[in-house]
Structure formats: structure tokens, C-alpha cells
Image (cartoon, rainbow, N blue to C red; front, side, top):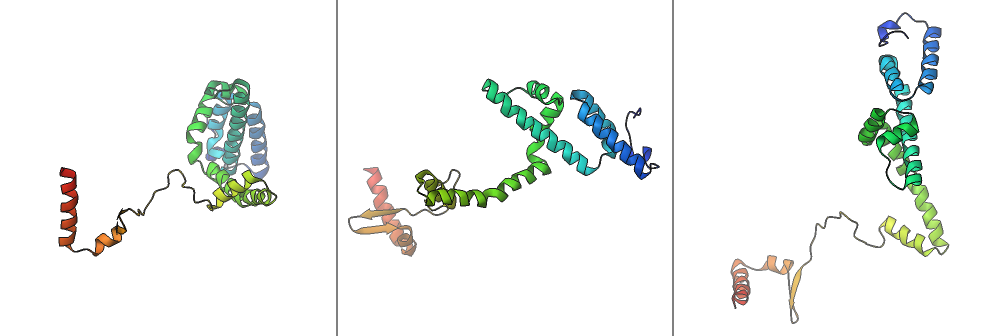
Length: 198
């Protein structure tokens, strides 16, 4: 533990009992240390930390940062600054900042999002049950969720357009225009151009 950095070569001669003891001591220290001391210790043992432990550290950071933000917003009614989140969590400001800027691309976050998606059929079934029992708001939500209301969602791209002109009982649509000859199209264009010129 007196080394600046512990590498795999430093522990290659350790037996299983010694490796277990090192893991136990490292876990205890991680639980006790806060702020930059914790960061420094993680950097010290970074090369010998198993991937599963790195995942646990990330999950812990994600959980405590989320809890702190929710609590602080509840108390103060606004998004807390990073140094306040750091103070609340016991993490360093650098760890908080790094986590907030990189969490969306982290594999653990993507797995967490998949967990929420996994629950969507159960939630949909719950909404359906409420709707069947007469809850009008739940019914509306259910219909929106399954697309039965044909309500255009934000960001929806319309790929087909059905425009037409009706003059008395004659309908001039895109399909009609496709069937006209070039001469006929030029005549219609001339008539319309003439109207615009008057």
C-alpha cells in the first residue's frame, strides 16, 4: 500500500489468500475514503481492479449522485452545482463532473436504460387495467402509447403528402398530373401563370 501505483507485476507472486486480503483492505479503504483521497486511491489500484469492481464503483457513483441531485432539488428547488453534489455524496468534484458528462455513453447506463425498457410491457399492462376499469386518463394514455389515437408525435417525419386542387367537381391530384402529357402540363402551367400575372 506504500507504493504510488500498484501494478499487476507487484502482485503476481501473491497467493489466493494474499489477493483476497488485498481486495478486502482495498474495499474497506474505498468505503472510508472520500473526495480526492478516494480518487487518488482508485488511481493507485486502477491496474489491479477487476472489471466487476469498476462496474460497482460506477454504479455506486451513479446512484449516490442521482440521490443527491434529487434530494438537493427537493430542498432548494434548483439544480445544485457540482461542488454541492460532491459535498453531499462524499465524491470529489472531478468525479461528479466526469460522471455527469460521460454517463450517457457508459455501458452501465445503457444497461440501466434497457432495464427500464424491459419494464414497459408491465407498465403498459397496468395502464390497460386502469383504462378497462374506467379511468379515462389511463385510457387516453394507453391509446397514445399503442398509437391508436393517430396523434402525430413530435419529430415525426411525414413521408407522403396528399395535396390536390378541386375546381367545381373536378379534382386535380398528384396522380392525375402524372397521367397528363407534357403538352397538357404546359397548358395548365400557362393558365396558372396567367392568373398570377393579372
